[in-house]
Image 1 (cartoon, helix red, strand yellow):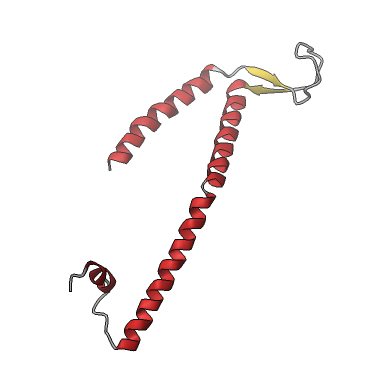
Image 2 (cartoon, one colour):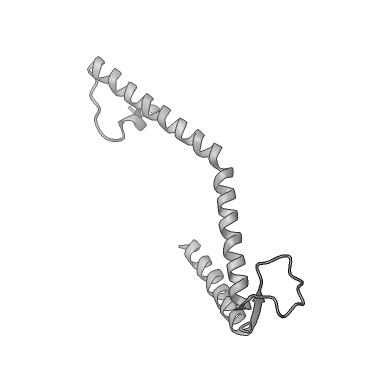
Length: 120
């Protein structure tokens, strides 16, 4: 609940600032994709785009690149997590097989936890 309140307290003002920024920067800027043309050459072909659109696109590209970089950086952690999850599943199946072979009957869904904590 606190996370939602903090989220709203941060996101609502941030959205308001982004909207105010967009309204204040509606003038057109020339975006030229040719890096070899002189910047002051007015005859160079280009595209007139509002300044806030250019900045929002750059912001979006930065967020996407940052997310991709963190996804790749977390790959070893995800690999280890998959390994340990498979190991836990294998050990659980082995425990169930041993219990069946010894004739022990599980008494509920939390029997493994109870056994580990030695509550019985």
